Length: 220
Image (cartoon, rainbow, N blue to C red; front, top):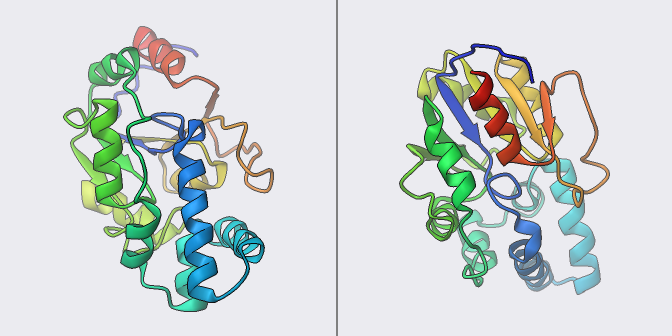
């Protein structure tokens, strides 16, 4: 990473598989709960529920959005059910936390999750006092990333001049790039192949957020 001397006014971070690894157990719990919810509410088999869960996630940004569009599911009921999980497996990463603290600029979590879930994760990560704000799915009016309207609202809400976005899903970075933000893909090898890939709209890619931030801080 070359020396850039860019002073970003806003640093936006996705939560799951960006600020911590949700693949170590959190997503397993959520996916199980999603399958149960879909099976029960749509009166389909668990196998069919799992197929719908993946299909809606790929096509709509979140499984929830697909359920809202196609089945008029109550988002708050869905989120309450699928986030009733064990959060204790999430542990802090002191080195990462210290690096984020060193960043100059406003630091905001930008996630398709809802506020109560985010606050529980951030508390367990010991990051709850580091971020200035949380732009969650309810503030998005339940229009999840990568919906362009949501990114326009994000930029307007915070009056972003020079912003950078970190996310593990490439297509969630594309609208940010279109609107002038710099983009960093935090590579997630367990991401569905339909969602992974590369693009000129992604400015940086990293397998390790800590290493990327270290280099950025050294060079700027």
